[in-house]
Length: 305
Image 1 (cartoon, rainbow, N blue to C red):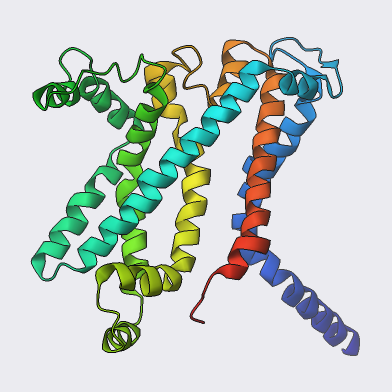
Image 2 (spheres, rainbow, N blue to C red):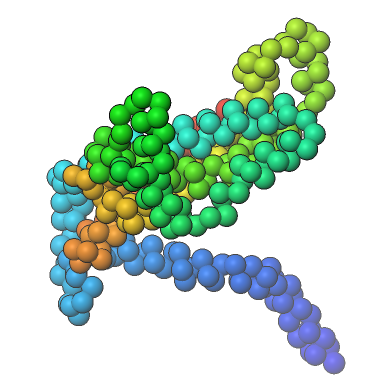
């Protein structure tokens, strides 16, 4: 009897210890299978020369990484990615912040109208947005060039001119994601305590520019940081669809991009080793961003709690 009770207690203790792991298993197992295993497998492939067809892989060590470092194509993609991120930060971090601040000044039903109208493009897929902008940016019959001509400006070859192609891709991505960032930033602005704003006005800080600089921006720091991170991370990923559908990395590598370069090396040139090396470098850049956010930027952010 005592033995049975001791066994039952032992089983209960073991069950109590493993219960948390059972609860988190449905979330952890897909991460292990679809995220971490492919990541480790990609790291392994980056040390081989393999065309994804041959059953034999040739070990080349660090040669793929050396090839990338000495490749003008890779550095062009890195440069374009950096410029693309700067454009995105202006279009879907700075711009929606000011738009969200303007909407907070609107009262009544118009505020709800602006929220819905600005958020609507978010529900459209990037593929549909790319096709729509293919017509909008048409150099002959596109409405964008028609408007430019109407106000006396020259027409632009948006997708075939190296000076405008990358900016056009950034505009497409920004149009698609602007609404989501706007809603997040609007929530951050609306969360600023009203008593702080009223106190600032009593002390003489009444102009919108002063409130924005001294109250809203510091107290919305956590939201701004979040939008900054998702702009960089998801913005880089979102670039693939318009580039693949509209420019294919051209003209003259003007829209070449590190994410698109992975696709080109793997599925167009069948150089999976180089593709994996680019993917690993991209992961390391994201990891550097996370460390920068965690140990440098995050410490300068104000959190209410």
